[in-house]
Image 1 (spheres, rainbow, N blue to C red):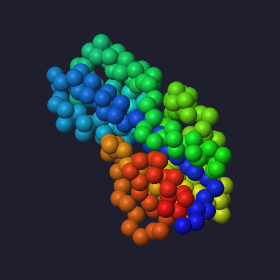
Image 2 (image 1 turned 90 degrees about the vertical axis):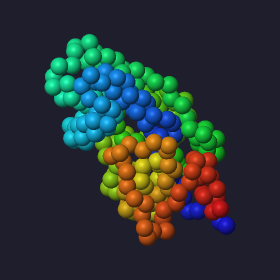
Image 3 (image 1 turned 30 degrees about the vertical axis):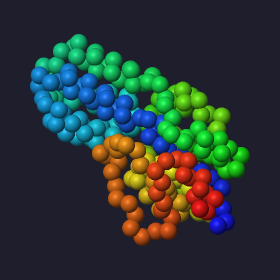
Length: 232
């Protein structure tokens, strides 16, 4: 088959290029130990998710907002009895998350190297500007990427702007682990959307696959993108 008419490759960062969500879940387990005198693990999970959802409009996505939400959950669940030492420990959990080593997922390095020079490769990620920039720097992938766009939300309008308008969007593809943020809005913008699931998905990123569209594809590992681009 002939190669697909694609000019721009959009790539999500967290849980598409490297591990991320597992660090959030590990931090939540540490928080569970701190609030164990006041609430069980299930209660904590529900309370933290509720607070994160409410705080998104104020703090946005990322580790700093998550840390503030952890503190709020601990204060609420303890009826404000949580110790100042425990609050400091939560802040320390957040600080550790901000410097964790970046571990590329299987096939990422090989795929980016193969795409280099053939397509315009743009990382499109949402979250805290400083944190996302630092992760890209720690990843060592910068030389394989043409551009990085850090946005507050991923919407059809955002994708159309990044890709350069309707005509260029039709010749673009967005790949990511989140159907809600990476795939569905990109398809709505007229681009291709490719889902590459990660082992853990944040509850607020869950969505159903599109039912009727010829612009949706699913792969299990990023290096399978190369065969799709070649028409296989």
